[in-house]
Image (tube, rainbow, N blue to C red; front, side, top):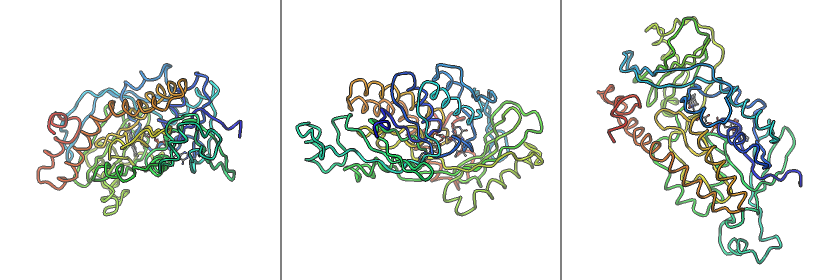
Length: 404
Ligand SMILES: Cc1cc2nc3c(=O)[nH]c(=O)nc-3n(C[C@H](O)[C@H](O)[C@H](O)COP(=O)(O)OP(=O)(O)OC[C@H]3O[C@@H](n4cnc5c(N)ncnc54)[C@H](O)[C@@H]3O)c2cc1C
């Protein structure tokens, strides 16, 4: 047990968790990064577009940049509706995540792969001897299962590694375990304010579902990203993102549409449109297929609770309209790393609460705006003025930004 005591345990080695591990390394902290997959971020469930600004978050030159893109083209029912400047990179995201993990390992971090986080228990101090400690008295007098005043109480977590159960103790637990986060569920189950939290969850859909093929590039595409809207891509869109020698083509649609029309069928219908419009030939070789969920309900009601925090998709930081979450995952990891370092050096949980405020300050306006645009999209998808609706609800049009 002694060897298994950490300052920080991070669940999930996607872009959020691997970034946090990277940002915390080199500060003499004992950090464990716990990932259920054998190979982190493989397969990559993502179209891999990131804004160029992402590189500024990392001190070093990052690995995993595959291609540079400069503009975004938006098509509505097959016609080009506009082109905007949109400088970005298409990553090989598994290489990027691998680079972050390797940097973390080089600086002494602990990485447990093939290791699934199962459960967490706040250590019950009422059974320990510090009876005079204020935090213990508070805990005994309240119905809360979480203790709130003493960070050093720690959390005990259970991890399944192949057939073995490992018990770890950590001062701070971070859920970077993506959409449908197990840490978020446990965090809410620890809460005595469950009902209030539930009420704060916005109405409307919580996820959209994506399906994507990576195809070998046949012709020399311009280095622009292409976004496609069709009525059959219900409450979502299609994309074509060019890598150096391949292309990511995919769709994301509402969960209702997945049940009604099928995700793969919808993708095939979209691909046929691309072939019809000569965007692709249809003879490209398939290198891989992925599907995945994108959280679109916006920022979670609580991203910090006592010594548990959420970052990335686990905290609902994907843009509810675009589904973009890589940059937000990295930014939330950066903010979390700063407050975790401060909280550990002062042994004060109140410092972590500040991270909740800062994450909200940083993301709330843009994600709430995206959320209200998603509501508009969902309420009006079958409108006769499809073009008008897209122009009000997609980020490349002025009305997205100006009209509420
Ligand atoms: C089809 C699709 C296309 C997308 N395209 C883009 C795009 O082009 N640009 C963009 O910015 N965003 C895109 N996104 C969103 C983006 O992929 C996510 O926002 C991003 O992956 C969030 O990173 P994360 O680290 O928070 O979560 P994830 O990437 O989901 O990482 C979570 C990690 O936690 C691990 N994990 C989960 N549960 C456990 C457990 N119990 N124990 C241990 N480990 C666990 C998982 O295996 C995973 O490695 C797309 C999403 C989808 C589905």
